Image (cartoon, rainbow, N blue to C red; front, top):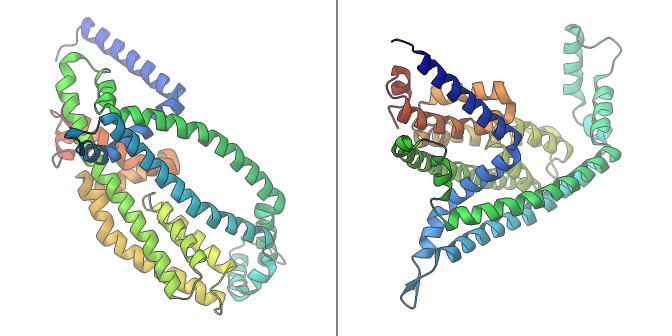
Length: 367
């Protein structure tokens, strides 16, 4: 194919415009995040808004602005209910961490610590004469002492202040995205030339369908996982508050593919060590937590997740795993969290605009 000066110039101009747009997105990243979060919420609430608009009063359908307001009120109620449920649980555990005697806790697992200490000394990782137990106690006190917790509370207060601004900004944008159903799509289509509008519209419809299925499935999976782990822990004699906290940890961390459940499991085991089941030993409590989480997560990983992470976004499981791995290497936890939605958007748009490329056809043939 011949390369003309005009083609090179168009390419350079297009590249410059794309670079400038990327810079603006980075510079105004907080506003972009508000818009994207609002778009996702509007997308999830679209069926609710459509259902409310079908309700008739005196032979007239309810106006869309009222349906959008009711949907937004539903979001507020859900967020407030979760806050009322979670804040006391988290506050209770923070208070527990501030008062705990780590020396007494570690004395319950003295034997495993001694085994680990001897292993580390044989591997020359730990010097002779150094007590692993004392090192752990010192590290725990430095991490969760009273001054650290006070600074953490101060940080949380500042975070809540910024969250108020975020909450009202997202609420305002979400309301108009729900009130004017095509508003977000119109904003996206405005970024493309007129002769690409048909391709963009098809891509946006596909993205809406795939991401709606994905987010609905992910929320359902996390909710079921949280409830199941909570009930299983209670069946083994754990207090309802402690069981709910472990269920909460696993449910929230489950939204991060692969790494999230591992981190959540470690946190759950730590909570079991410092606050064991009443009348049971630390070893028994840890065994119950590990076995329960492994069993439940095994069922989840082999039965539920393949449906959500693969079938719902029409991608091969190995393909999804590699994408999550690459995203985690590039951007850590946030990359893993956003990997599947971002990859879904890229695949859909690639199919619309680069279907002549054989690799793109291979990766998007299931869409």
